Length: 241
Image (cartoon, rainbow, N blue to C red; front, top):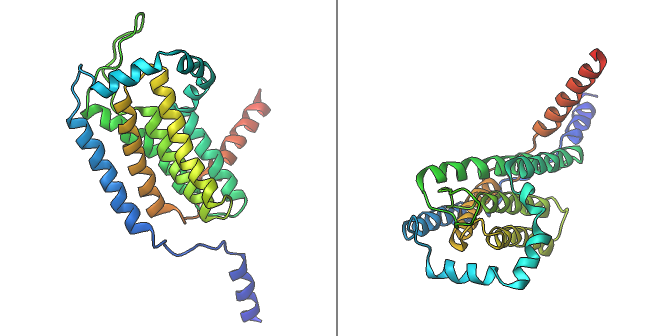
């Protein structure tokens, strides 16, 4: 009888895969990406954009990119911490509800994408593109929107592919398409230089790859508990109102 009960309990446990063989290569790639971001920063000057930056900015001021700027404008709030971190918690909650692993990796990638890029901006100072009527800012490198979007996209794509939610092609579309779209928007909107976006891709890639290697198969209920706690507080507030 004890054996039967033990068997039933075992079946109820969510399955967790063993650490992926891809972990070590992803860690190495993350280190290389972080190093590339730092090396790129060393070649940039505070108030002198590169020739590439000037050429890309000139192109972004032509008719087609200007029209695309309006279409891509909704990406702005999604690239803020409150946007992509909220999306990360929503995805983690869904994974937890469907008994899939990887939620902690997605949430961690979003938070680390924000925290690491804020730390980088304390080290690297660079003037943003100057625009009439816009106050001068010196926090251009790396692009925060691009860093956060890249970190979250890489980890989300990897987790969803490992959990069988999307195909490899679908995962590649998420991992590549989201960062390219966000980075392009930041240049077209004239908020960043092209090299700021390159730095964001590298730094976000380092964060995402690290989360993939360390947390991609972990099972967590953090998002579920946070949402349940928030719902409880809302009900309590409504009851006392």
